[in-house]
Image (cartoon, rainbow, N blue to C red; front, side):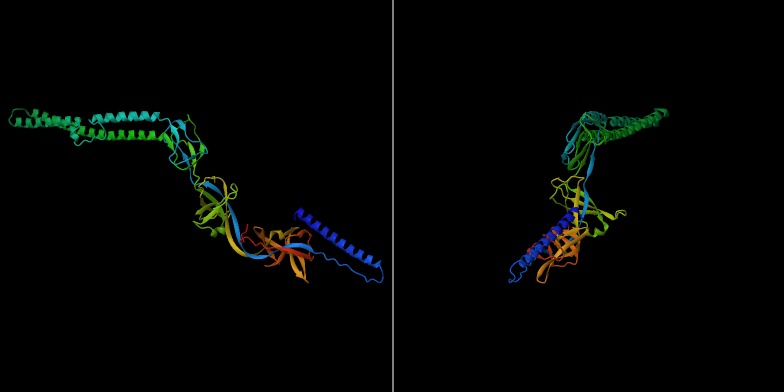
Length: 429
């Protein structure tokens, strides 16, 4: 029992007995005064009745929603580390910590000088390979490989050697030349034939080299684009790790970005209440940081395994945050309706807590008079300005809601006003 309640109780007892003594002494003085008068006059007796005025409220049987508050934390739907794919000096920083960014927005520029030089080198190497094949650009096609200058020269040499060999064969039949001359011409033909085939292979290799040089040039051009670092998501800058003038290596983190719409709410639900949660279930979330506001969401994940230590199950909800006023790391609260029970509710003003005992003063008619009777109860859940009670109290009973500190068991009272309010929908808090 609180000290203030005890003082009020003690004070009410003092006021009651002072009032009683005053009434008793007044009656005695009246009798004594009557005795000192004329003997022929009949004796008169003055009777005073103590009636304490009270307001009352009626106990009401009503449905009460049993609710469970579950607290969780908001997390970013995605958190990404943004890194450049090329090395170089940071030329320009476009955003800083806390800034909002949009997808494909430029956040950082790296000095492109190295990539521009590499493009020039790759372009020169490519032009050199094209010139060896007699081509002016990579788009120029060769319909006949034998028209490539080196190949054409080797083919002409081979054809000439073949003709000379065949002529020497005819001359030998006429016995105009020796066998050695025929053999020498045949050897010359075979050598020129091998040179021709070698030139064909070299041309094929040059074509492959052109493709390699072209690929290298395309990579250099792509690296030039990579000197402009863009945001991969819509969100906010959680952390800035580089500044203008810094040297960055490929893969070094420049920023940490987080999404803020939607957010994820991670909660631990007692396993005995998990039946109240289902995938896709719509929920409404509040947070102490933004009183009076509610945010809609839905359940997107329920862990299939219960935590054996806490006997809770992790549940994840997706929460809409279009105005970005919710921040990752804040706490969110949802309220689950666990059951709806029919209970007796009384106005909270009727409840008395004294020395660990909870009671009310029920007002009942006895002998044509209203009297207060102290009744012990057990209190339960709240419903606005009403509260659930259990005990010897039923629907329709009247309970005092005023003058409670000066009431006593069995004292006569006078009902001044009856509270006409009713429980607000039977919602527990």
